[in-house]
Image (cartoon, rainbow, N blue to C red; front, side):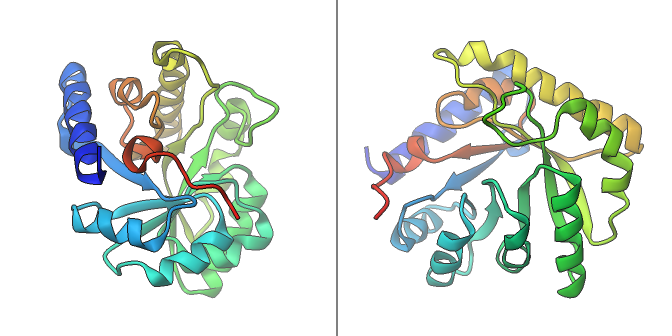
Length: 229
């Protein structure tokens, strides 16, 4: 299948998952993950109506974004080191992987210097995996108030990458845990958090059924990534 056919297939699968969950298709955004894909691929996706894109690495994004259509909006979805916070504030409209209070404080400082308010998602490690970044749920709840008090950040919700499982259905408990944690955060803050970023090419339908508002799709949209140089 070419890009247009894959996008049509994805949208059909998204629509079916939304129908099963009693949700509107408009309640889920497709974030196209462009890691190791060239600007030409981004522009082809924009021509098909996609506007939201995600990059995992700041260096690749800095080189790529200026060469892409100005209609593209960019999220930082990979692990972000504090020393790249200034670049993240400059190049991204949202940082999804805020995984510590320290990183949040650095982003807040850099956003203030740039006279910006930066939307962010708080990354939670729902599988308690040592190999992955993200807040422990209990720590997130304990640090939620100081996170919310940072004047130059706007918390928009949570993001998670669950443990890999051979069957999508096996990931459902982790997606459900992320949704329930978002609800606890909303109760503690006394306000809604509009976004829950979870689900990738292999499991996005289950993620939608469990409440995802952003799904991060690379392979199912663009095919296999080309090898890094």
